[in-house]
Image (cartoon, rainbow, N blue to C red; front, side, top):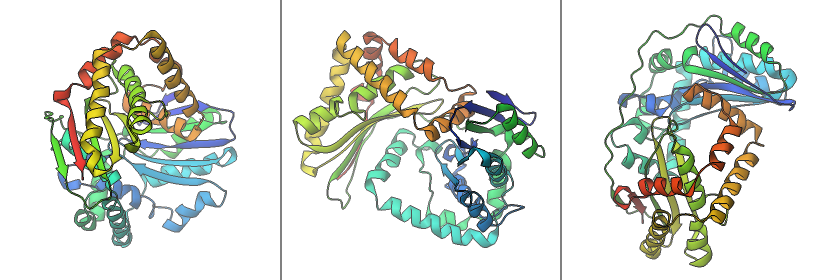
Length: 403
């Protein structure tokens, strides 16, 4: 299921009876890998990778899979850039060839830079006009002040317009190398055939000889910040740094977050703030995990006059987790709900394929759904209470309000 080529490229193949194949590259090059002067460059390179390679022009890239009904896409986040395709089984070779070409052989033509910079600037304008999106990035800026994890993915319009082909080449020489990437594939394809195909397509590539230096995380100082925005309602986030994906506590904090404000209408915050008090339309709890650190946050939107009341109710629910252990019946029900959500989520094959790729890329291990369910099922009420005492400590919580 997992193979490492001589050039360092890792390959994960997940057998599935589906005649639709989901495949792609996870390149460990995201916002956290940017130097300060490269703000927004990882995302800009994602856009430019579709603008021409040694063998293809932009039109050929866009048309190559579409003409057989396939789909080609990409996205950038804080710790990776992912290029992925969805095709029928018989078109896998076509998808693998195209993906390898745009990831490792893009030319970033100067003629396309200005045009694509304006596309990204439009994206930045749209993001600036959406406080419900922007507030999440600004909250991470509070948690990781001075660190790349605290910067948004898009960058600034001034910086994006200043990038040149040499900048893209400099960044990709360091980060777009086979030893810093994973190829993933899920579908009714034979593993050995996938490995042979990718090995042939990447035979001209070598592992990087450049040193990659990770920036240490800055100290965390909880803050309360209010921003005055011209919006109809207030947007509020409160939260804390959390354990990272390597921590054994990740299972407990994930279950805690789901009980508190997961997607179910029976989550504690939805029941208290929406169903009982009628103060919000939506309130959610999120947990994001990087390998070395996590982010836990609660988000809600409400009338500006109700911000303090909503915050009081949220803090009350957090305190309940610290003061009271879940009863056996409630713990059992919470586990059953969370495990069921995980299982249903795995029915989304594209998302599952991406999970296999990301897990191998960042943890050098295979995604194990059975182990995840087993660890959730084994959690005790005492473990959840201990995790809550650390995560929900009032003196460690930061708050950001747009009013």
